[in-house]
Image 1 (tube, one colour):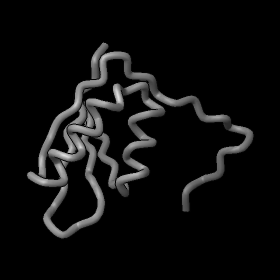
Image 2: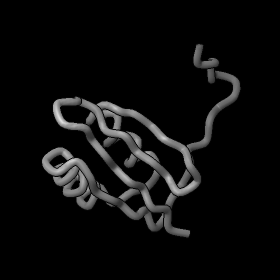
Image 3: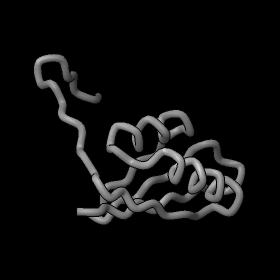
Length: 81
């Protein structure tokens, strides 16, 4: 099932905001944004074009056709405080 991700960036801010259809949002630096998409099985050529467009114009969308949520290893995961 494809997942739509809306990418926004405010002028003069160095991070992207990702908003998923389920209401989750993420604020990530550019390299962390690329890693986020890569882990979730996105086409990285499309992601790079979308990030470039968003960097210049403040808005873009990406559809991940084979979306895969990463599996967390509960033995090594630490709580975010």
